Amino acid sequence: MAEARIGLVGLGVMGANLALNIAEKGFPVAVHNRTTSVIDSFIADAGPLADNLVGAESYADMAAALTPPRAVIIMVKAGGPVDAVIEDLKPHLDKGDIIIDAGNADFNDTRRREAALRAEGFRFVGMGVSGGEEGARHGPSIMVGGAEEAYSAISEIVEAIAARYQDSPCAAHLGPDGAGHFVKTVHNGIEYADMQMIAEVYGILRMGDGRSPESIGELFADWNQGPLQSYLVEITAKVLAATDPETGKSMVDVILDSAGQKGTGRWTVIEALKLGQSPSTIEAAVAARSWSAAKALRETGETLLAAHDAKDTGPKVLDGDLERALLAARIIAYAQGFALLSAASEEFDWTLDLARTAEIWRAGCIIRSSLLDDISGAFRGELPGGSLILAPAFVRILGDSVSALRRVVAQSSVAGLPVPALASALSYYDTMRLGRGTAALIQAQRDFFGAHGFGRVDKEGDGFHGPWGL
Ligand code: 6PG
Image (cartoon, rainbow, N blue to C red; front, side, top):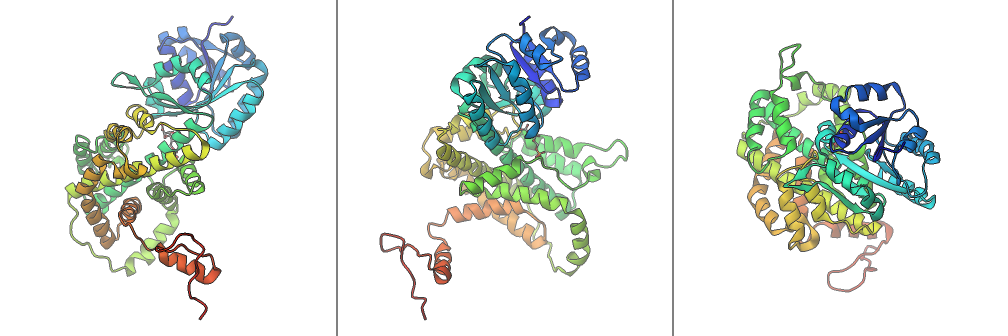
């Protein structure tokens, strides 16, 4: 008997919490999991929400439980497992039914799946969901890609389960096919950059200044009351305040310093490079995670390199400088992420609404911060050169904070403390403030060894050559 409004396949952490969120908002949801024993225990543990949960032991049961047109959310591991679920599900669906991939998919896969399913008469939605476990349960930020009419069929549910910012749901249909998953990927790229920059500031205080994690945590908690207010700064303060129950040491001190990565940061960089973009802060953050994994090399480096390096402690970095440096670098990271969205929108004809994207990131997602309201305002206002760093509000904030970023990067460098993301942010800024840079020399070199030709400042065209034939 058809009784469920939506189906959900994959009762892992994110899927289970999303199903409870949907059920709590009053929509009966049919749930399926490959290991079927999980279905019963999930429903048994759901308390009163079990009334809105329908267990489906098979895809046939799920199809029978759903009111048409059927909509099924897939929340399984990205890649092959998503294709496998789609193939198994399809025979039980009718034309016009909607399959929704709510995982962190590679947007190239989403474009491929959308085209293939459309050709077969199905509708496919690629839905980026941010906010971790807590967000999935109580209100994530939701970035939707796919046909507009496919979104209309599910928007009531999607907007009901999303986080809210001043009563407006943090969910939007952003464009066709892979647009939603691309925006989610770039969200994660910015997440990588912000986390790395926070970690670099922590490193300056911990390794450079020898402060305790607890006292650094207090500083982050304090900063979270000001212009750096954000989820990531808030949780950093909490993480640094935590003690390991086993050893009584600061929790952060007993955690191995090799960072994991599931791939979205790397995808951001790969897609950026394909689009002729270079989000340097995100690139630096992905690189820093890879370098962090080279634990054995670093341990040997500490004995062989550090001993021969005449680094200086330099002048002490001021707390106020660190706060403002982080703010400047964060603005630059957002600017690079949005520039990438804009380039992708043009390449794939998505007409992405960047202001709306910033708006749906204001609550629910991992990179939510007080800056996002200003960012959406900047996209709705005058934006010289299309870049956030040139929006009047950000020109002012950067003018007040870049000198602090300079001091932090310079002093860290003198002290031998790595700050790859902060330094990349500064280099990007310094490049963008030079109307004439150094690429004339690159062009001359290219022409010298390969007769590649160059443009001249005083003539039209680009096929000129230098007097290299000496
Ligand atoms: C989010 C998170 C979420 C997940 C990342 C972590 O927006 O809710 O970004 O998607 O935590 O995939 O990615 P890494 O494992 O690559 O750090």
